[in-house]
Image 1 (cartoon, rainbow, N blue to C red):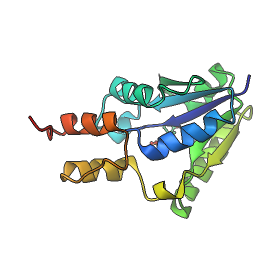
Image 2 (cartoon, rainbow, N blue to C red):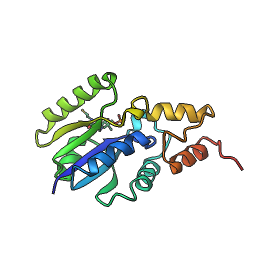
Image 3 (tube, helix red, strand yellow):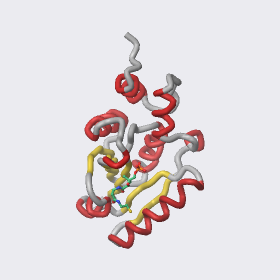
Image 4 (cartoon, rainbow, N blue to C red):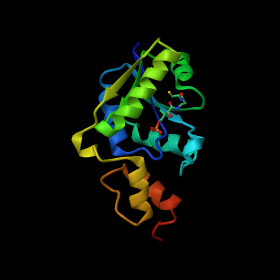
Length: 162
Ligand code: PNS
């Protein structure tokens, strides 16, 4: 059983994240999308809300599940006997932070590999932060996130049409 953990804040889950999960689900027996508490990042959505948005997005992928975690990623990966931790790599600008994190995780626990996956080129520019900013300013995020995430953003930001 090859298990991969796909960790992130997912605030909120975007089509770029979904693209990575779809690719990973074809490579691994089991993929766990692990939503980090990330309190320090002051997320817009509560932890359980972020998990629920992931759950709705992965409904048609039987070998993918959503979970939450707090604390060190290496401990979470060990607990689930994961062989790999997945991270999406969009552009060179992502590299430095991701490289640091991967090597630090390896120092902390050498029992799994960090694997970088490139999302579809259409999503190279996409990030949860930019999606939130566009939504907050009244822009259309339809092409960047699943429909239910768009609806959740509208509700959360008080933009819902009545
Ligand atoms: O989507 P994000 O915010 O870029 O994800 C970052 C995340 C959650 C993967 C990273 O902050 C993390 O692994 N946090 C858990 C705490 C931890 O293990 N920190 C040490 C990383 S070297």
